[in-house]
Length: 124
Image 1 (cartoon, rainbow, N blue to C red):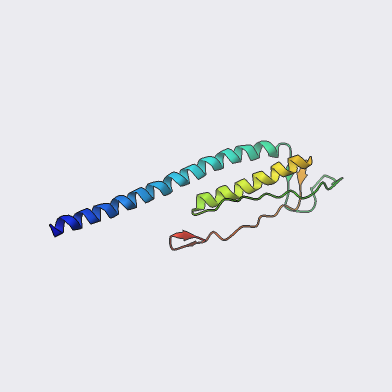
Image 2 (tube, helix red, strand yellow):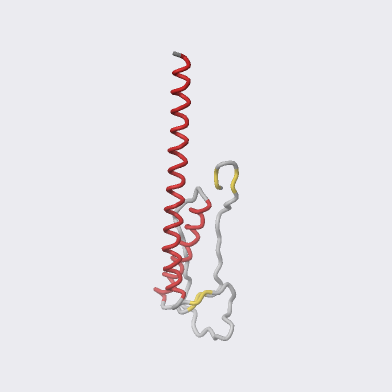
């Protein structure tokens, strides 16, 4: 009887681990697919709006500064794939704000993020 209880206990643990791993894989797949969609949207916007991380654009003259375009993502990441998705969402949101301002370029683009070094089984 004790052997059967131990077997059932171990089986429940393995099923739980399998379900947890399956959920993580599904979440990662969802993040990767959504990231690909955002990549396509960013590629389309880049046809209209140039982005540089410096204060000038080689061969171009900045005529007017229209304002600040921020790209913020309110999401949280628990995996590397989700973290990548959040960065893409923030970039896409910055492009959308620049479009609303009527900009044809973004200068001084900066990316500020949390740390994504893996510590144990958690992303910080």
